[in-house]
Image 1 (cartoon, rainbow, N blue to C red):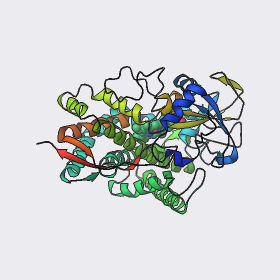
Image 2: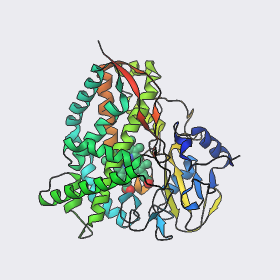
Image 3: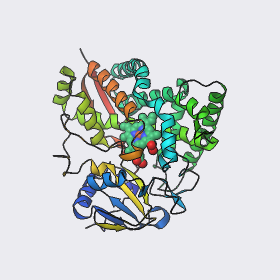
Image 4: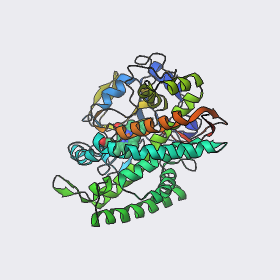
Length: 409
Ligand code: HEM
């Protein structure tokens, strides 16, 4: 049964996402009350929603399943651990409820719209070519660091209007604040605290600069735009900067690395894509389903309700497991097979409902541009050693992946 399951024990995630645990949950207890364990933040249990249809039902009902949470309890947000009111819930875009969420999102939308992204595509293409050529020139590379992390970082730096020469400092800070290698859920470490302070101070300076001489980038919009007639508060601007650095760099690199690992195991699929780019679009959707870089987001029930036949009480924490939904056999035939021709592929790697990923079009474009550069230049992609996974239940991904990218003759 479920007595041995502890989704707050990060060691269970250190070897990758525990799909087998969720296979059991979907079958035996699709909406499961996770009792508190010694690892659970706040010493409080929470609901675990693992089936596709229940995840989508809750994800698309933001009035009942709140991302802010603080209207019905003292802490809230989208992590299992409560974040205090006014620190992130109620401030960060992804931890806001309507109506403020709608206006906030509308303000940012133009900076991630397709037409805006089309303007940076050819620049990203040149960057992708340079990244791949450097990696091919070496007999061995760390695919995660040298290839997968680079393009998202350069893209998010460009989107936010951060000077490219500063991007590696940002990566270091993002890694330190998202990493749980030296701490457990709900805790901070000296490293993560120092990184948060440095990122905050850098963001503050950047925003001051954008206020004085704004450009067309996203941080200029955040620094000078108005929401319902009022400028964003300093804290809202700062937190948005932190959110976008983390959301923009961590997830996309993991989708790229997860996709590459799957393709490295199917050399015939690599050759097929080399001779015909037609299925690349569906291959990218499959990489997103397969890697599910954001495994879950939490909500808080704003009212007593029923979900998957379970009675949920007002104020309780409810976690929606996108990664599990993406392997639900009721929706995906042979869910544990990586199939680049899978159609339809209604995966929820970018979430569902009003909080659907703001950067989805950018992430898809980065993946397409990078895999085109790889397919153009790499004959065979060989994994040379085991991938080092992230010890986290909030991000599924890889920190290091030794590979050889054999150049095309
Ligand atoms: C493969 C890459 C990515 C994945 C898998 C991913 C995943 C997600 C998911 C699951 C959500 C929904 C969160 C929720 O419902 O609580 C989300 C929201 C969000 N994502 Fe992404 N993301 C990716 C790339 C990006 C990029 C490149 C950016 C920014 C440039 C970004 C910015 C955001 C923002 C701002 C939100 C909050 C939207 C809102 O609350 O309205 N993401 N993402």
